[in-house]
Image (tube, rainbow, N blue to C red; front, side, top):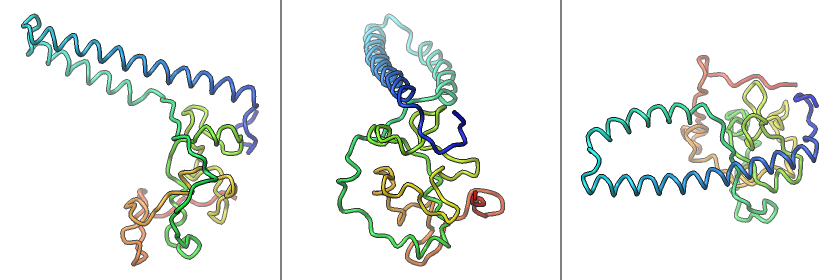
Length: 196
């Protein structure tokens, strides 16, 4: 299947990938449990004077830097909290249409994980290399963002899109009430061109 289509992945492929990612999350939890045991053991050895604390700290800092770099470049599985997006209430009331010419829909450039509800519906596309983050086009916008900066899957949009409140988000607005958008993070302070 071409990655340029708007078709959801094959259901069997999606199910298999979801199983693998769930197993990955379980493995991550088990690694966390093992690391807490190792840290407790090290603390006990240090408190008994069986490990030189200074030598240990130097070695730990070196290994920590290596692991941070490894974690920075490795892919993680991300899943949003499982809430029923169709039952959300007290959603922010923002007149997006009246402000779209100012903010250029930049909330649609933000990256976030999908929920299992989104995945089960099979409508919202996600990044295959970064499961289960919302898929973006090369211009930085969500693949469901239209040429007019509207949402092509509005009725099925994720919970975070429904509950997101841009009013105090400094990535979007310097001052929401005064209608002053934040600068774009590129050199010429211009939004990406919409794809047709």
